[in-house]
Length: 459
Image 1: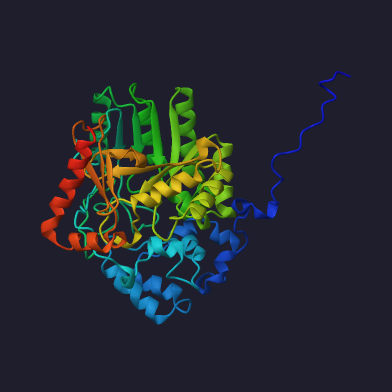
Image 2: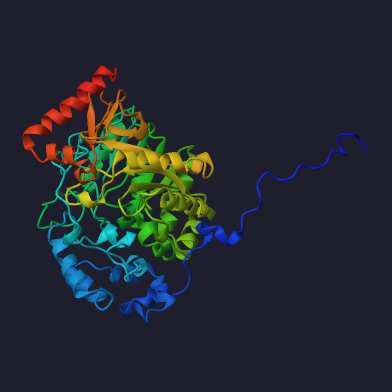
């Protein structure tokens, strides 16, 4: 035996982890929906049926309040009713989603926060807010197609979703009109789609198309196929992505709507034969949104070779700590969904209570990096208000933590321009809050931040 072979094996540097501490693998199982009195008699077969989920989704406030009656106080019911009266988004919630809410603590529950507003927690909108804060309509050469980046476009074939998130960045278009917002219409229209296809085909620089909305979950199987085949048939297109929140709020569709799942699969397979990438982009925000049903759905997609990536929105009270975001990242990785982006919350009307500071995003990214493999570690980004596009949160030219103004540039998108993101005013020091309370100070605050960015050489 050689001397090398006789060397003792060094002890492990780290002791093994107790399996019981691997919380990301602990997924909710069993008939959890039966905790809701309205669903107490619903069988597993019914609950896993996407048609049952869609038919029983709640689309009006009286039905929502009737479903949660007895689970919450009358004061909360009134608070929610008044919250919807001020909300930019109409109500649409799946039974699956409602069954995941901890109704013993409705004010703190992270799922309730995302879908059911309450008046008592509302805050005034930031004075620099714009209903279409990302200026998507400004960059629309034809209705429902935003062409901002040189080689990528956003196609919005429809304006409905399986649920309506309070913080939707497209509250200017998605869902029905509310008391607060008359919607920009993007209904399913084949002629409008053809205008978009003609434009895409006419632009050789376009290679990447995001199909969003609304939500691709709401497209029929034949529409999934029609859009996919039309885009993959263009020589210039190399990548397409179907964007849907569906796996997070109604995973049953993937399990029981065979025509829809088969349509996605066929488009993916067609893309592979053409050496083009087709992926599914989804949207989980909190670890409690991921259950055993979710894993069954993502396992089915994984078996079919479908790449799934996740784009999270950083939401106050939902995922704004390293611990919660870390658990979300690990749980997504466990079900073969790649954490891709964490978006700083857009400046959306009526949801100032959900936004966080840029510093919060920077802090979270610092502490989750190294938690898992790099390809499963999301990048925190700011979608720059005014049309600057997605910027790495760390790439600001200047960040004034007193006034809450961060300044970004986008040389590849709009060279020479400056784009400002704004922290929630209630998170700022008292002196800064007082300045923002005075409309005469607003432009001076912005000018100070931009001038400082310019002085640092930001271009």
